[in-house]
Length: 310
Image 1 (spheres, one colour):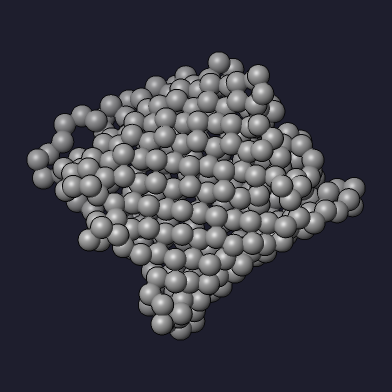
Image 2: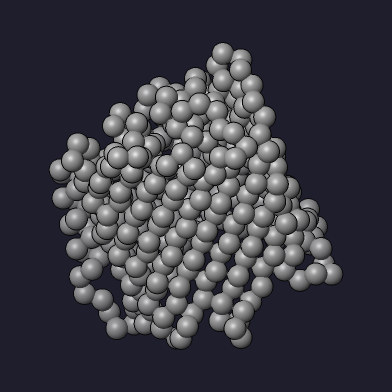
């Protein structure tokens, strides 16, 4: 409980007294996720952030529920976050303390980003997150990982993105992976882009109660489009495309699936003080909690945040 008390004390400190020159930013966010195997989760969070100089400090509370069939696991949560400058870059830090009937994990997420030049952009990232299945929660499994990504602008129309990352599951499973993306923005159509994304991952063993085959490869070809709406008060981004997935487990069994990926993001302001952020993803690039996925496997998630600012 000491970690929870410390996080609660920090939350109260953030909420205490604000100067007139600071920006106040309350928000209410709802997150929903469901897959075709009947795993469902929803999270509701109320967050308050205040701006101090160039940094945004936040604190919030909420609830998080996981269900699979007739089983359910519930957590209360407290959250602290920071988004602002750090060592000639931009840092994002978030801590979530979960309070459940059998388990009280502390989750961490952070990144540090820097634009090195007009061609190079780098990011360091790390996380400590749940294995978000009922089996993973009952076994109190956490995934701890870190990685590095870099963007290189080859020319005004083409950007190459690469990332390396490693993860350690608390059951002893270790995963290593790499992602390569190539993004082409044709100059004759504003807002349009064509991109490829390839992912390769290797695990120590097949995950038990979570998707983690010993070998995994995924390749996607996607078309993206972004534009401003309603006198530029809102921005819309769409990204979608097909792909191919190859999987092999520790026994050498192989499977090959067709993939799809679709993403929608919308954000903007109804007025000078009230706005929203909406994101939605539907894909089959993940997998079920047990065994290999089939091509008709589906995972969809969405988050809606209502925001105030003054």
